[in-house]
Length: 115
Length: 126
Image (cartoon, rainbow over all chains, first blue to last red; front, side, top):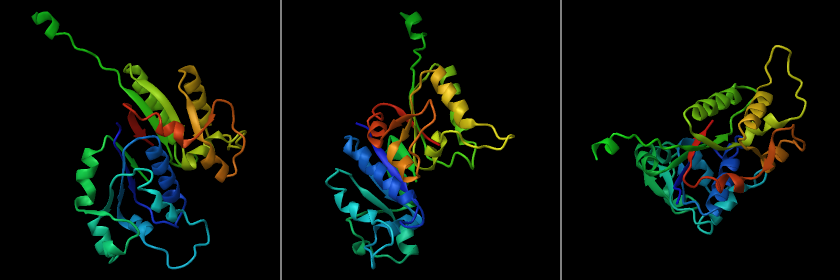
């Protein structure tokens, strides 16, 4: 089985990057590839619950489907949480907080994709 | 049989190429073509080239490029045809960018096709 790690580096609403990366993650998992996700830097903001209605389509609600699609771990960079003063319990999903930009997860993956 | 130990078994690699960067602002399509050529020269195989996100702009029919600008998309399409490499683009990403028609050489596809190709292959992202 192919172990894919998709690294998110963009915030949710800045451009189409975050949305299309999430689409790719769901499609890859749907084809029975084991997929883990790693949120670095401002990408952690994708995981925050919305405080208002976004102008565009809210693709972040599909994060609820991660377990359904058998997406494995959702890794979040400790440094980013610290930078944005986010408590991991306030995120939408249960996450695994990792140090060193998730280097250990990156080393274990067979395929890396960065968005 | 010491002689057999000396035989080097050449293991052929097989690549899936994902292109998702802006193909008009950067010469990424030329990078892809050169990478594929180098891999083929080594005896490796390119299973598919898949265009996603901004890279789907490469399929635009009749791009009105300045006279001094090379049409890298056409060069890549010709290269892939010559070497029988499937050159696919994501239908959803293209439609979101208003692209409903593609120039010859590019095949309409979807993320499932990309995701289904990953088993055992090496993945390179441009």
